Length: 161
Image 1: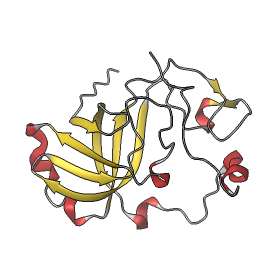
Image 2: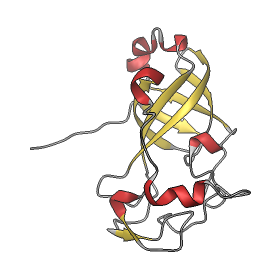
Image 3: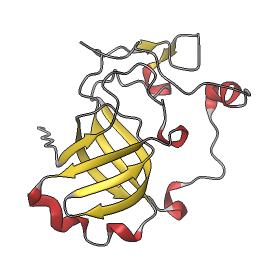
């Protein structure tokens, strides 16, 4: 089976490197912008009726695949799939961001946590009734999420060349 993914646009953020970038969009107030390719503008119709959207993008500068990593917020090595490390077999990122406005082929949002120039693969509306799970747990991350004063900024451990 062949899978072909082609970008539908690019994401613009102030982040040129992975150092000190927010590690999750929910921990970011940073503004960003998506530039959609002209051929996809019609697909933006009615998206502005949602308060939040899910951006699906490619970690274009991630380091090579590692099946065991020491993730942010932890000092212990973990299996890749129990983390959100960008060093993946298919380096796909997702971020739920607040939609500020859409102007033509430009989407303005709050919650940037991706590098400038990240290729955008898809956009989906965030629907709380579908996307939130009140019975979900945070696995090994729980102990770190409860810490007062926890920093949610990255270092460069997963940034490629």
